[in-house]
Image 1 (tube, helix red, strand yellow):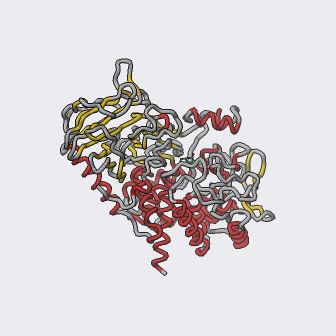
Image 2 (cartoon, helix red, strand yellow):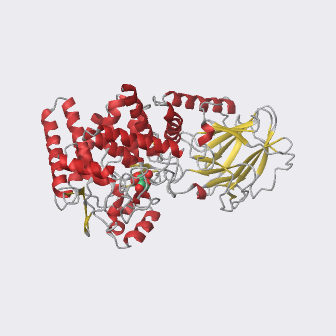
Image 3 (cartoon, protein in one colour):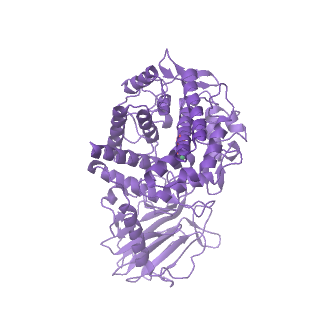
Amino acid sequence: MVSWEGAGAFLDLEEVPLTDRGSRLLVFKNDDGGAGRPGAGRAGLRVAGAVYERSPDTSTHLHRIAVFDGAGRPLEATAVVPEGITFGDSAASLVLVGSDALSIGALAEPVVVLLEPFGTSADGRPVSEVDGAGISWRATDGTVPAADPVSGDTGPAGPGAVRLLLPPGGSLLLRIGGAVDQAPEPGGHAALLAAAASRWTDWFARLPAVRGTDLELVRYAWWILASNIVQLDTHPGIDAVVPSKQGYVAAWQWDSYFISIGLRHGDAELAADQLRLFFAEQTPDGGLPDVVHDHGTLACVADMPPGDVATLARIHGADSPMVTQADMPITKPPLAAWAARAVDAVAGTSLQSELKDGLDRLHEWWFARPTPDGLPGYEHVYSSGLDDSPLFDDGGPVFAPDLPSYLVVALDAMADLAEDAGDGATAARHRALADTTAAQLVEKRFDAELGRFVALTPAGRRTTVTPFGLMPLLTGRLPEPVKAALAARLADPSCLSAPFPLPTVGLSEPEFNQDRMWRGPVWLNVNWLIVQGLLRSGLEAEAAALAERTVAMVVASGGIHEYWNPLTGARAAGATTGFGWSAALFLDLAVWLAATDAGR
Ligand code: GLC
């Protein structure tokens, strides 16, 4: 069962658990990292759940699944590939099934499987840490597995633990939540394993062409994009690619746009669905929610989960309108039109015209928000996507230079669509608003003396250097001196040209912190956006150089993290890994560099 060369290097079951498309199960080594879980340190695997707003450390289904040979000797996990795990010398294997089940099968010799659930209910049945969901099992072929008569040396185990004997060819289907139905899986364990292998083979066959140096990480990125698929309870018919199954188990609006940019290279429909999901949740006034999750959406302050309320109250004060004003909308930057057009350009879809009305309403919504001078801003910090950025250190609203830049790109995309359809009047209307917005951006946010774009905050002007001040490059309409000033800032090694660019706060700024989220670390969406901005402003050499440095940093770091330390190029402290938009945009840059290389 090997469909992916080099898989084991990434699927370490420590940082990167085994999961599969659609599965809510995460399979880790049984190492508790000091958490003091029962059974920790003994042979076996821990199974946790992928749950919205919950770390896998607190969503344990089973403390331990361990496999032993007939003599009671533990069989270690010897190979981990996308379709499953092999134990010992192929004595047994594990494959994930559907959203909440897994199957374990014995091959030629009998094996003993130890199942140690998180706990037991009042009436003694095994349950998970997640909502006390029941855990049940049966033989995969529909029979009832026999309890292990030997028990041997399989070690001590907590309440509710059982040992089951699997004869040669025997297998076990285990399900979290709901009862395991007694209908046999057609073809049993072997068929489940073969189906998983063939799904992954098909997926890797869609991998776009990249350079040899980038291939290993691109394969891993491509795996992340499929393995991060879940079906949200609110949209069971859509495969949503989530940022991460560890904590970020929902669709976030701008994550979905970036993710679609990567998916467009191999799965047009999956790419398109990431946008459709959000437009299915468009509010009557035209806004889009920040998050679509299992229980609804996060579209305004009243929807915020308790953890976010606590964090924002700590940073901005419990009386901040960003905490107290229940109806304040929470969204994400308006990159939908651009993403739709980008998906269409590569995948041959007609997503932008499909979503046209919703896109127009979205743009009107943004221009209708309160503004001091005609240029829209972010009322809530989460709407910017930059949770702890110093741009919001004085609270909200913040009128930063990135938002009008994104809107110019969006309006250009709508104008292009109208031109495609031969509708010159509509095209001219969109283009005119784009022109005005770009001109106002320079007039009202560019400080010629400082040579940089600034943000308006409740405390006045914020001049902190961040790459968001370079986003006006996206308009493709900057006067030469302004463009030159931004190019100089980008090239300044004391500020934005860090050893590993781009830091999200300039190195020389007092707010710079190499590890704290949006206060210094490198985020691939920022680098990707600036690469596009440089291209739209005709700075091709600078765009290619930044793309090269970005891709090289990811390859050298050996992982697809949430964000990177700009001084060392390693994963920043606190960043999660296996992160959706990093995978998608790394892949997109690698594909672009391969194409430009080939074109030389
Ligand atoms: C964090 C980021 C935000 C992102 C979300 C999901 O909150 O700051 O930009 O959308 O995580 O990945």
